[in-house]
Length: 127
Image 1 (cartoon, one colour):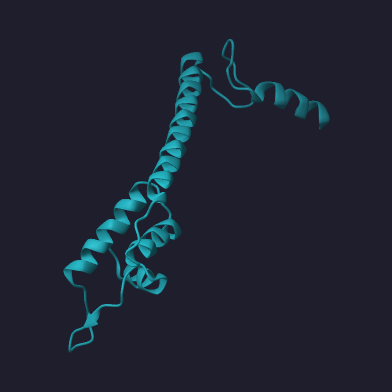
Image 2 (cartoon, rainbow, N blue to C red; image 1 turned 135 degrees about the vertical axis):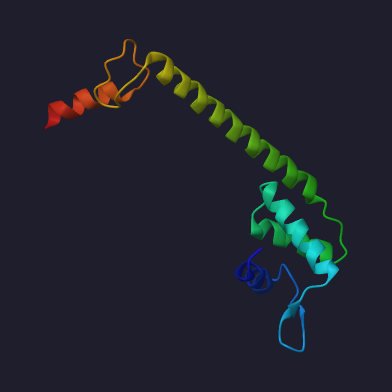
């Protein structure tokens, strides 16, 4: 992790400011390193830094985080929607490849799945 990221996390309050060595270097303890792992893991799960900060803040006040389950479910729903979108994109790309499309505007394939063909015909008529 680069220095700018660590300093940014400190400014955001995600990470406490570390003690410094006699030479002025930041000295992160094991708890800070563990906290960094939690932050990065939460980000990999799709949580934004704002969401991570809220969840950490709740935990720091020794309150349970009852909305973690709801937030995790919302993230899972978001991931499922993205997967559906990606699957749709994949299917369309396979159709383009299978049809052997060769142009977005002047495709010569038969049964072109690219919808821009009709759009370009209208655009050409306008010029």
